[in-house]
Length: 350
Image (tube, rainbow, N blue to C red; front, side, top):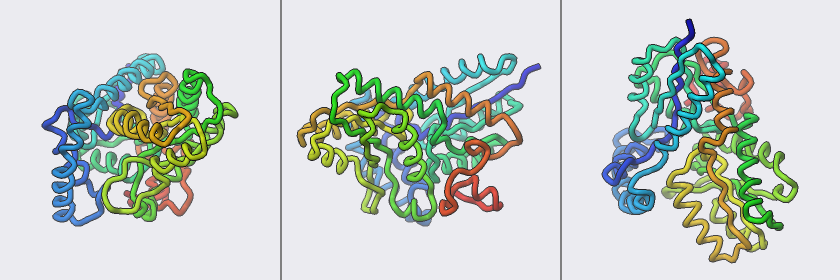
């Protein structure tokens, strides 16, 4: 008799309609992994930010039908992963469950759905390829806090072979669809973080750099010139840089044709469909870019689904617990928030 395997896909989530924009933002900024502050102050800041940003965000979501496409797209990824695993694990019954951090279906909903399935094995699979305390760390904590049972948790996969292949192929395809222009600079745009988060030992920026190095090495020579940049800054804190705006202006000043890849995003949502497709495209044209091509997010690209399938199967080997790439921590020792390094010493990372 085969195993019953639950695979839990973690993602940020997004509002499903105009009425949920403000509570989604409030949930986001009330997360102590996002805002380091005592609970009363954090709750006040979350209310203030969601109240002031809510109307603008609602207008941006209105361009996408009133809500975020992230849950439907994640469901397509889940369906594709389930099909892949059904072929790779004949005889086993696999259920892929969505766990969104800040809006429905919440992590606690996923805990209940997975428990009802009565799995023999559970794999927690973040749709955040590069680990951060603000994403994977927060989601894994939410799983524990909601009473999620023992599981095999994929930590990160910044250099997983099929994941890298998916990015490289999409970049090259977008470049060729534009006529294979010369003078290209590939801008790898990732979601930013406050510098304070990195100083505390978060390995996200380092892992983004490893992803970019691996992807760039797979690209044709005409696409090797590149820069890493960071988008979606919020609030007065100093964030890691350079910002995507700065990188676009610099590429324009240097007479480059911009090919922009959302390197830390695996699905389309407000940061790609509004920031990249509208705001940054307009900025590039205003500053005289030779061209501006936006590479799609990975979505259900076959290579990315192959990566998720391989990660799931690999996680099933050995005991429950964290599953770092290749079975060992990859982050340098200075990144104390790496949960795999912390597990080696019996400490709590996130």
